[in-house]
Image (tube, rainbow, N blue to C red; front, side, top):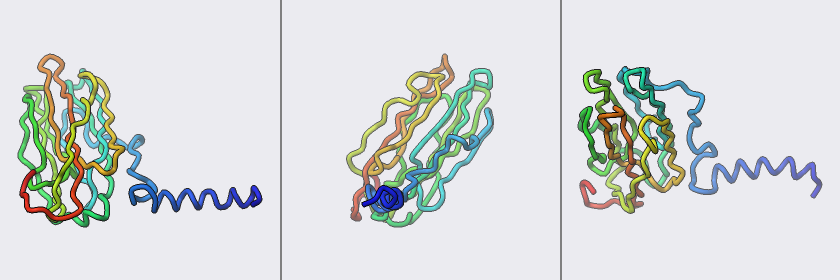
Length: 201
């Protein structure tokens, strides 16, 4: 085969592999959010939801001590695998109060498809809510927690889920009363390819 033909067919093979190989996701695995603006300004509330049928796969944040010890946030979403189908219902979870440590997963075996937050000057912290979506009666299994993000209070945070078999179901956070910042561990789970009878796992 001539070198010219190789240069013609190589990009086509790469695109086809990206579209149909691997995990069955489109070639662009998730939207590269590095050049996007933040979803909030410091000390402001925000509400972020993935497009219908997508879930959160990346969380990015920068900390500013001089701006109320607050963070700016950005998220990236990706469609779920075709085996999960379409979401059957979505809802906002209970509020996790500012200034406290907390642990929460989406109820009804839901997956995280958004975040909502409000800043409180009195505690220099935010309250949080997850936007969750349920996919038929699919159940989570093989759950794990990520390492802490950020690695140390006050650092930038960049969590990307590179394992597309795992979906974000929630998080646990610690809060430093000295640093006025949070560290997050995200709860990631696989989902069954069949319906199960458990309401909440």
